[in-house]
Image (cartoon, helix red, strand yellow):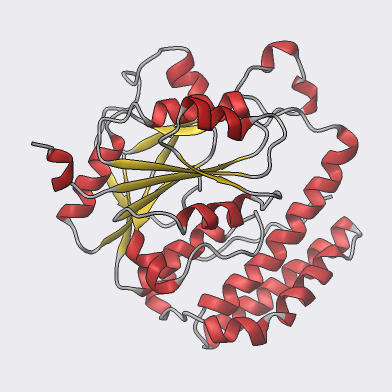
Length: 322
């Protein structure tokens, strides 16, 4: 008798682009999970290194979405999530994977607590815990659980019903707070987010600063180092996106009250201060673009109560990139 049919299906999804060796090893590790049944969904963002062909050849059971253009991380995740059939869905990066029994633990926690809507995975460095030790024995042994809503897209599981009812990831760009928007939706439905110490992912921390650009830093898990000339531009684009997305998140989820008014004033001050320090107008432009979307977003608003907003937490300001 197949006991898998008695357990809920879990959908594991990720997005990749031109990282064939990385994503192949990630998929392999996902299949090392002790939990079944699972389905793995991968969006390939029009890779030119034969990533899609390699996945089809080595893992024909994977649900592969071959995009004809680079959709970006968030739209790619949504594209994958639309195909998900599982009761629970779990987001990964193409260089992150869970501990052997973590999906099983996740399902047990969800099944035993109907008020639990989101599980925020702990994130551990792949090189420290797997590459050096080849096992999970060196992880902290103390078992804890804490209410949590700030999480990373490289490891987070939630009830599929949340996004079915309130919509997928906000397609505002590839910078925060797109994960926090999922948390807000969870809370708006009267559910909680929890971080359990024994549910975690291993992530390859691939960002390498130019001063550490040495041959030994390169391996099949590493991103290529950005050239210094492009790094400044990338930094500015990130700050622009964060400034815009922070305002969009506020418009969509914050209640209309005095506290939100004070928050908007602080936001505007942070934008102004960041503009003065960076001597660039991109932050002002980001704020104006955010406000221009208000008439569109107002029809999608999911206003939290002040108590719910306090639980989820407010977004910090950091718009002073130079």
